[in-house]
Every structure is written in structure tokens, then in C-alpha cells.
Length: 211
Image 1 (cartoon, rainbow, N blue to C red):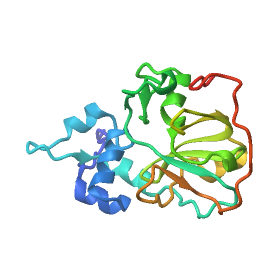
Image 2: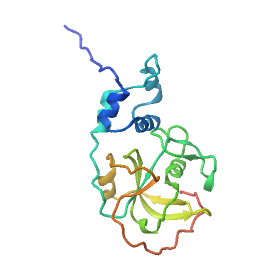
Image 3: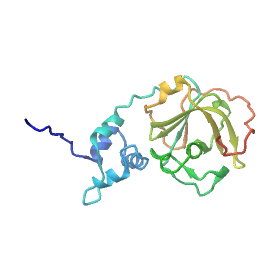
């Protein structure tokens, strides 16, 4: 009786991965650094002797085939472009980390610390986004979605959003999708531009408290 054989496709190089994903080298590096292209141990194991990164083609293709979000969104949603997870040197609002990583929760961060890392502190005018979606992305690939229920302002004007679970509509629109991320600012309005409402920011909890 013949033995079954599992055929494993060889890993692909960075140029091929960039072409499949439609990203540049810097964006590919960021996707790798946040864990979207595989765990660090596996990726290091597939590096060439010259130090070039190699990627699992199936994982790259899965990421590349994410549906696109049509912009602008019908509501005044806001995207925050996330960098790889690092310690926060400023400890603004008591936050210990900033950024995002696939394994942030399993690497010692509590759910509240994980939220702190990506929900603030951002430079923007937050009033018009109350009740809208806060979308965390890495190079346009959506990694977090939540509803904005309030915010805190630091003395320097930076914003820490207070979040609640996303609505079904928010989840359906953004989860597992991607959009064309604007270059430049770390925050990107996803919806139409409207006149800002005057709303008093939340003061029910101290800045950085995400419970």
C-alpha cells in the first residue's frame, strides 16, 4: 500500500511576497514585524544564508486575498496606522506598550494593556468619531476593530480613545479586510467629512484606564 506524501511548497522571497501583497519593502517588513506573515521562529528558520527573509506562500496569499473596504465609509470612522509592538518610553497615562502584534495577548499583555497599546495616544480631533468605528491597521490590513464610546485628552492634546465591542455592521465591514492606507499621518479618516460636533470628552476615569 503506497504511503501518503505531503508536499510542502518552498518558501518565497521578499520580491514575490511584495508582488502578491501589493506592498513595498518597508511595508513588507512591517507586516513581518507584527506577526502577520508567520511567527518569528518559523521565519528565521527559512532565512537564506545571506540573511534574506523567506515567506510561506499560502500565508502570503491568504493575506493578499483579503477583500477591500470601499472608501469612503458611510459613517465617520477612523483608522489608526499601527507600528510593531514596543515598550512605550513616555508611559503616557500609565501605558507600558504601544503598537500591535499578533501574539501581544499571549506574550504577557492583559486585554486592557493590549487595548492601551493601540487605542492611544493619537493626534486628532476626536469629537466627531464618538459612536463610530476605530479601525487599527498595519499597512492597510485591518487587525483591530472597536466602537468609540469616549475619549481622554492629555495635556499635549493627544487622544486616548475609550472603546467598546464593535457592532455587527462594523465587524462585517472591517474585520479580515484591507483598505488603501494613506501615507503621512498616523490617523486616517475613513468616512465623509462633516461638521464637527461639540461634545465634552469623558472624564469618568483617569487617562489610560481602559477597564
